[in-house]
Length: 287
Length: 71
Image (cartoon, rainbow over all chains, first blue to last red; front, side):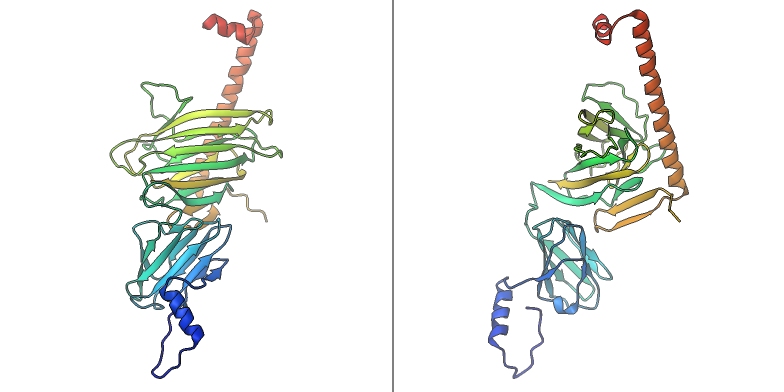
């Protein structure tokens, strides 16, 4: 039951008492949403569930809630539901993104600020993986920015990579493209000495543009991506359809190196030529 | 009128916000540069394959036999 203002002498109905009891016992029906939603004053003290296969947001604005108000939010859908600070300030010690079956509570400390307390849910606070972002591969380039710094490792999964140009290669850049931020790819997980950091991107694997079902799967792990004292690396395993014979596959085991100590906050993906036709990239945080 | 400018999708992984926008002039230059480089690398690889095949043909041996010689 949403927060009510009761008046002296008001008669409480059985339904109101039942609803209040459910709320007090953290039960009761959630207000079901199926699209991005902006909280309203009547949501104070209530529970909201989101269900959508694509990414959604719950926006929090000022001057609607009072200190002490709470709103519980549960994501039932496959799309990530992200708590978004509209005009209000929202702080958290975890992530503002709720993967499927994760839940959290907005605890308002004033009319303009709230703390988002994320529940254990599917994403354990220690151990396990949390889906940070999922998006389709379109256009010439995908920039994954503002990557949360609250995990130990990152895991990227690219499904069904299909470039518009046959044989175009999926490439990746750590952080930003410039003259000093250099990287290098080492293929086949072979030992290598004296490797020059002489490239600006890492070439993961080629894809094919044919209309047959594209079955490619690529994973890239980025260990200890937040430290600021070492160079960075990733290691990838890729199986992609061979462009000249779609029944066959390319298989690549590769190590990606990046010569900067900066914590990784941005990863860019693009085909070596032309646009992406289709595919999906998922980014997980690993604890 | 069709928009022919390269499109860049930017995902804010903290807020979940997605923006798709046209590449700016600097980004278009970078995209062109890397595509030129990709074409050049592909041509280089193809030329190498052709030269290798011609050499094997001149020597009258197969790829497997050449690998055996070098092992």
